[in-house]
Image 1 (cartoon, rainbow, N blue to C red):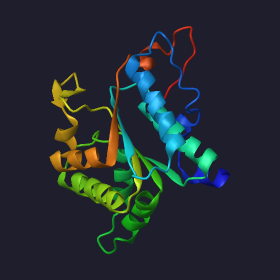
Image 2: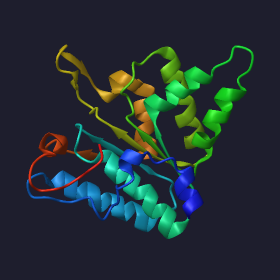
Image 3: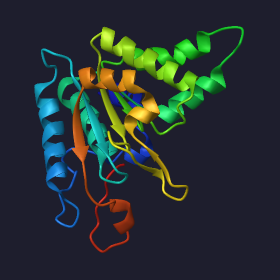
Image 4: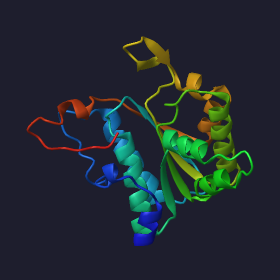
Length: 216
């Protein structure tokens, strides 16, 4: 179990995240957050299901998407010894870019292999990077491979299916489809159950008297 937890690459920032400490505080809780926690618990209880379907947590920053995603894979490891992995999609792309060699693709493949083969993969911050052709090609390769191999993937994204601000200072608006493309958004409908999470950004209230921590 310790080896599985270590290999899951959960960042230290989210080491505290568990399903049971996703607090439904009355100052922050909405019906959608209650539903999201129930959906996460049900996902763990029913894994593996006959049809390999993942989850797509959608919502603004600070509502607990990453907290639930990390809580799920921790519970799967502890309760069912499932091989899981957590990767931030922007960081994964950066690692691939930094390892790229025009002579050999072995470095890129060594980084991608654990991502492709994990029984359950969390891809955090989907759609947060600029949608260049290379980004979309890499994302398409990962998603299509895992879809074809019946691998379960859990995504988090700050984007919605309608336009919402990515950078309010610049007045830039995007939808998830704008960032990942219509083909990939369509594939996500097949791969995942969408969980919408609406609520206040807990980070704005971190210094308030009531202690309560939650991942992005």
